[in-house]
Length: 136
Image (cartoon, rainbow, N blue to C red; front, side, top):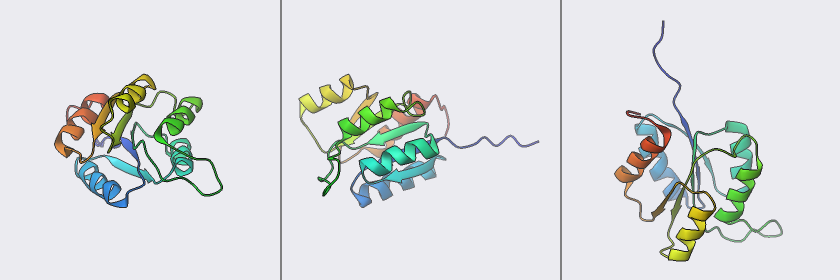
């Protein structure tokens, strides 16, 4: 009889490959399964397909050419419209120091807000607390 539990899945949505890679390595090292997306379309598709336990979401993305202009707030709106993603906790990871952005994110339903550069150990602590993981 196996006592191994299925790792919880975290979706990272950011347009910076270095940020995605760095956070992915930290989370995988802590025992989480990581899925990534670099824009709003990928994020919505990944949330539908993977049904993550938690989402790390950037706020600012470069404008799409000839498509929907995505930002973290629009992505959060889409997540809230999806039955499969509506209740997934969202933690904002952004370079913005703007207090209004933080308030808007919190009002939109974010459970936590982190400014880049990230303090990875504290982020991991908040992720564990949000997911109810004493040890991940």
